[in-house]
Image: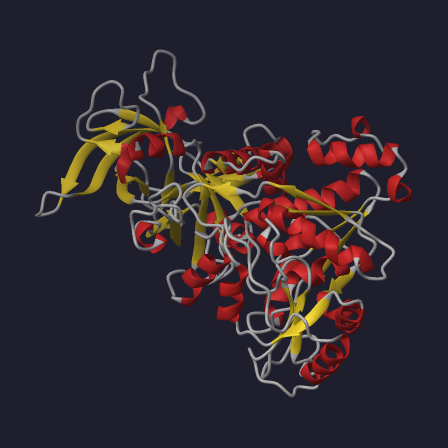
Amino acid sequence: MSNNETTAPTHFIRQIIERDLAAGKNQGRVHTRFPPEPNGYLHIGHAKSICLNFGIARDYHGLCNLRFDDTNPHKENEDYVNAIQEDVRWLGFDWEERLYYASDYFEKLYGYAVELIEAGKAYVCDLNAQQIREYRGTLTEPGRESPYRTRSVEENLELFRRIRAGEFPDGSRVLRARIDMASPNINMRDPTLYRIRHGVIHHQTGEEWCIYPMYDYTHPISDALEGVTHSLCTLEFEDHRPLYDWVLDNISIDCHPQQIEFSRLNLEYTVMSKRKLTQLVDEGLMAGWDDPRLPTIAGLRRRGYTPAAIRTFCERIGVTKSANSVEMGMLEACIREDLDQHARRALAVLDPLKVVIENYPEDRVEMLDAPYHPKDEAMGSRQLAFTRELYIDRADFREAANKKYKRLVSGGEVRLRNAYVIKCEQVIKNDSGEIVELRCSYDPQTLGANPVGRKVRGVIHWASASHGVRAEVRLYDRLFNHPAPDSDKSVGSFLEHLNPDSLRVVEAVVEPSLGQAVAGDRFQFEREGYFCVDPASSRERMIFNRTVGLRDTWAKIAEQDD
């Protein structure tokens, strides 16, 4: 399949694959994989890799595996495994029957390690971790050979057998590749292949193993065993590619995937480090991995983002070799475009101010029909209850204002969305001078249209005081006050940039139809933004999360930061 047969934009990885296909490489196969470590939840950066790997396989009629890199059981668990699978499926991708674990290959990996020892290309080293670092050298100075580098093949085989049998404590010995301690690439200076880990229960293999292979050794072999043709990874692994190739070149395996690196996603006003995200969760600074303020896929899903919007975002940012930082506004534009087309409209008053329509009968309830979407009749309509007592948003009233203010003022008129024109006749204040109620009148001749010659300042939203539904609305803002919180060296920790106003909770009144909404339903609260029903919501307590505002506010934030 050539690129001009796909709808996806071209980029350097596609160009490489198309050259390979044209040359008949890999028997015309395209086989990729997504290999997450199950030590946390996936985030938007992983979404880029998911879309790339599964998208490449789809567009070139190939295959994509889901493989868990489960070689560090101290930090991994089954909950993370399940969450990752849920996220990949939610994004719209299917690995079919190709679900693998690196632990599936532990016996084969051990066998290949024995091959390296027998070939004189691996040895057991008794240096501890600190000593290994000291012997490794620096970027400008070569490393020093371990005093254990010259052990015989027989001694290394025996020690490695005893290591597997559990005879030695953690940290006492490792298996290292014998490559080149003077290599300009530090990754090639006799890297560690295996380390000892006692006292852990692996979520797949239980207590069967007390030694675990390192990622740089496990990954290329796992790729090869699965028949992967193109091993796509982020730029931080570029310096590891020589080791990837060395491992495969020095064992008896008949597949040699090609590692290709691309730039990782860096998103402004958040962090993409799994270690730092874990810290935010573990220290209770977030309400969990699915906190809507986090860039995790679970958090974005709870906030109301759609799979289509995230896929669009990943496509728009492109695939390059150059590291860059993506503006948050770009992600928000994608979800805004999607929800503008697909989200039903609703009325919600986030800061209620009571309105009494004095010339409207006290016992009357008028049901007004309102479309769910102004451009899509197929979405149908809902009924709004119009009553004598209403709520409008406090920001939609001023006692006095200039002509630019297009809402309600004392003595002025405004239209209620999908209802009548009302006029403010009287302002009621409490003893502190705070406005607590507006007394208004309505014009019964203005339902649906303004009389000829009638000037109305604007249109505002509202909710019936008696029929409206009380709801908790969670207003989310940027998580950090700095566009790159983990790169600011002037502070002691990225946590110092946490935005104390990243979550604000308000008590709102929403239209009656929203009382029947279920978790995951998405709406545009007219004039307010897009919102999603939270999973913790119930008939007794409706909870809505703000997904995104109606317009981009990030440009203004950037100006303020400058």
